[in-house]
Length: 453
Ligand code: GDP
Image 1 (cartoon, rainbow, N blue to C red):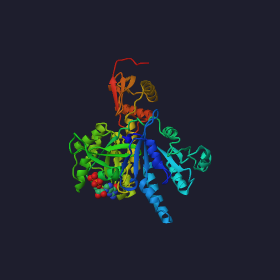
Image 2 (tube, helix red, strand yellow):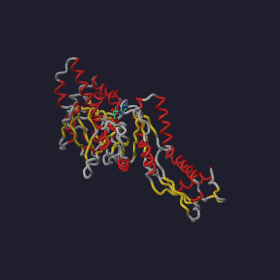
Image 3 (tube, protein in one colour):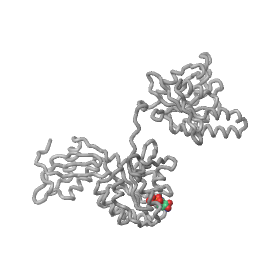
Image 4 (tube, rainbow, N blue to C red):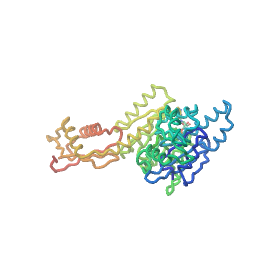
């Protein structure tokens, strides 16, 4: 449940009172203790609920074990080992947090480890509150707070043990959290399809993008067993590679010229929002690749072409191959081409942002007023040619659909608009509405309606 709430993490060296504070904050809400492998093994999670405040999750890392550990860390060796542990735990938890409560001990004062942790926290750039604990009496409060000022965080004195300022703490933490994030649903995942002939490197690329450890392979209920989706998260955005079973199965086949089913590939791409067509730089553009590009274009699929295994071919051959691909794609110039190497991980960082861009361009919706101003401009730049002694009249322009953006020109006589002029119109609309890599449909409809002014 707490997974959907923004998480606040308690960071601080052992014995500053994090556990006591944690228990104060969650009150009766029982903590869930996670036994996670590795650095996050001592992780406590709970939910902070206060009237008139949005709920938020709270995470305490490195409690018991580290505190026990602290007893045997007298020597310089020990300190280093145990500092490293704390930092590793805090790092892992901070990467998932929305805000940080940095807990220090007002009685001990500022210690080197506090400064060390503060430096790490600052680097995270997350909203942070410095919680000065064990401030038990008002009379010494200012004195106790003084030296923590130089850490540069906003501060609040509290006493976890005596319950001093705990409500204020909840309020100040809640104020650090992004507005409305408690109830905001997670954004839907972007669905991607990876197509290409056997051995092009589809599995390698999916693994390189998704990262093995993040990958969850699941048989989707209610679908055929072949339908295996790979879901992963990167920079807070969810992605799904659809239908990867076919991709995987073929990795066993070493014969790279083995035919792959264009139909099956098209079927996968219909389940996705953006399709990635993978070519093998050592093999060039095959007949099947060409057929696939043709089909994808005909179906107005949003896709990009990736030339993989760039590490295996010299730069000059690569340029030549890229030229071939551009020529092959002459009928759909908007399709972007990237050169990558799944093995060397080069060029990979461009793939997902480009997929996002293509997806967003597919969603473009232009208001009618803007459309018709655009039409005026486009017509006045280059007027339609005279065909059989008559120049077609353009009445108005509407957008019928998105994904792909579909524009309809109402004209006096569609027959009199030559293909070349239609291509000019498409180029102009792409430029005006910033649709560079998404597919687009453009219809010319004969109409006797008068132009709307
Ligand atoms: P799939 O059939 O399309 O899924 O292809 P695989 O991902 O199984 O890759 C086929 C072979 O190509 C494997 O031996 C990979 O290690 C290799 N491979 C994949 N990507 C690259 C790359 O970028 N460079 C090189 N040199 N080899 C690659």
